[in-house]
Each structure stands twice: as structure tokens, then as C-alpha cells.
Length: 122
Image (cartoon, one colour):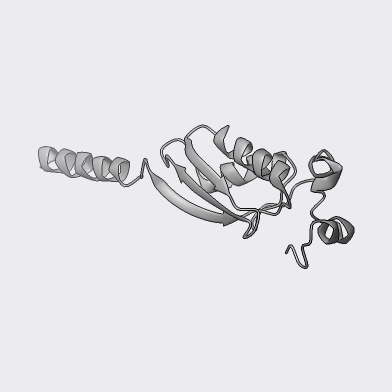
């Protein structure tokens, strides 16, 4: 009976480990407005351990990610993006982090959005 219980336990532990994807894909919305924002968002993502690819679109505000779920998760990636001043759907950057971005990257400002030809950024 002990052997059966041990085998069942090992089986479930092995299944749980393999359930995490080392090439998970996700797309999240990240606020930004220009090429400098793109560089900052992608760098913050790629500096997160386990992120293999990060491509942000200026036009759609979509960040396409490939990451290792064994090393990171979407919440951690989004927090690192917020830490450099960009809002995601789940996590808003602090005022201090937002104010650290270059003046032309102030995506919350209607005046800056108008200067970049953006009608609605949110």
C-alpha cells in the first residue's frame, strides 16, 4: 500500500512540474506612445528572468511575450513594466515611476497624445 501511495504521489508531482510551459505565450496591453516607450517596455520585459521575447506595438499597445512559466509569471512581468513608468491593464505605474519617463512619453497627457496624433490611448 505504501508503494502505491508513493507512486501516485510521484506521478502527480511530475505532472505538476511538466504542466508549466517553458515557452508560454501571452499578449498584454501596455500604455505608451512612441518608439522610446517601445524600447523601455521591451527592455523592462526582457530584463525579467525567464522572458525570452518581448515585442510591443506602438499602434496597438499590445505586448507579445514568450516566457518560461517556471521562472516568471505575467504579474511579475507587468510589475517590472509598471516600475519603469508604463501602465498595464492589471497594474498601474506609480506617479513617481510615470514621472520618470521622458516628457514626450507622458501617455496620460491629452496634449502629448495630440502631439503624437493619438486620439485615445486608453
